Image (cartoon, rainbow, N blue to C red; front, side):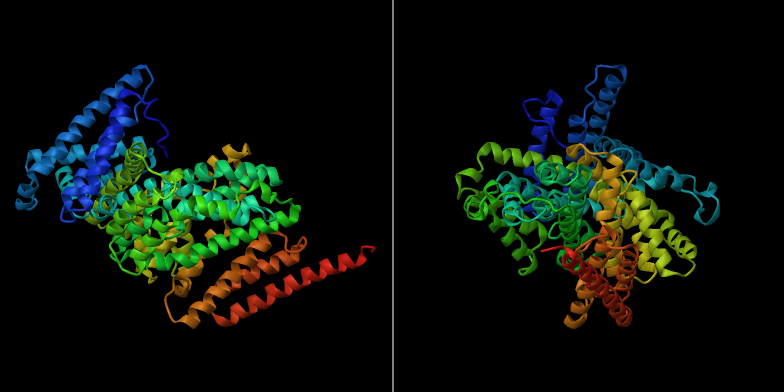
Length: 629
């Protein structure tokens, strides 16, 4: 996944042009945000700007034959996509009136758009998503030659282009609509908020509250990443943003380099699960499910808190096991100072959540208000004040950040179009259910493994979109709650960020920690145990998504929280002292029993787990009694 790390001064002429257009892109998006009747025009303009900026910014600067050819191709594609998008904007009403009877120019414009989406997605994200989309196009064309249950009659290129280009099941479908009408506004807010000192508030506040504890820097990483990661929309970007501060501190206090990197990778990945923004996926999930954004964040909040609670316990146990020293409070920012310098920047976040949750404002409207409020509030302190340069820099940065989302959504739209055209969804659902042999647990395991594999190397939104199209319908057809199904695949798609062999967040963290990549990745996989277990828990226990009455919700949250803590202690092999092999096994068994929604098995699991912890405490007391006074 590529990041915008080029400054305006060091940029090439083409990149400077991209920055200028990116600023215009953000201003145009704000204009559309104030004009909610824009409809599909907004999506067309959104995609056009995104592709043009990608082609200008992501240049092959090498003066080789390959580099020169690539730049020439970029220029040709840029001209073609601009013409095809302008053609669609000018002739949109005429095309609609023709009701699917496309002429030659329509098909040419559609073909150019599909190619430009694949080409642009490859430049900004990499090969994975364009290859998947291309395979689906080939499947639509040559379906009659595919053996077995996936076979279909095949479709002409004209039919495929028409369906993918001009129907609601194609490029301009709900994923791109979410990017153009929701995600862009929250990225603009995020960009303004970060430059006004919001990221400083998060990191320094976490340092002040947790830095003084045993193993404090790891706890700072957990706390800061849970907040910053939700806004940043990228596990890798979160590692870069908070890891540069937390990883050196963790190493300094005694954590091993690979453990320090693993903690940051797991913390940063979890930010994608954390409301209110969930790495921008919350808005797209709401769009895909046809429900309100508030319903998504309500369903996601408890699992996200349990994920971080478990990680907090793990880093605490590691600090106790290693008997790490604490950071002196004199080296940490005083809470009073942090609040005086940056405390006012909490106001936009509070107002944003209030508008979304309590006043039920649309996400776009709430985000626009939060942007304006961020600018106003920033003037309360000189250190956070946004000047004209920072405002334009925020606009430019937001547009650069949305490129991945926009292209991923458009590319996923191609997959959606082929799915709808060929009826592949029903076939895939039947095949996976048949493979599971009627076992819902086996079906969940199959979809979990598939989600990790398909999510490898993909950004948050791209991974979610592919899985929402391919895998989530399988779980819904099997009878699981739709929101639970989408959260299930969302969790496992993101866990690919830390799961070998393609663990991008772990790779980034290992670089900052100067640690072995493989060791960091496997340690992160162990530390993130909650991320692998929680999806099974909330898909079997809807109460974890706050569905049901208060008593049932409280019971299930308590049992689940206890179960994943038992599991974390068991895998860490330490409570008050080192656990024996049998104690470790019993704790893990107890945690598995707490996954079940049955009260009896949960109570048995609680009894077993508590018995092991009491026994561990007795071992400590016994050892202390043997030490001479």
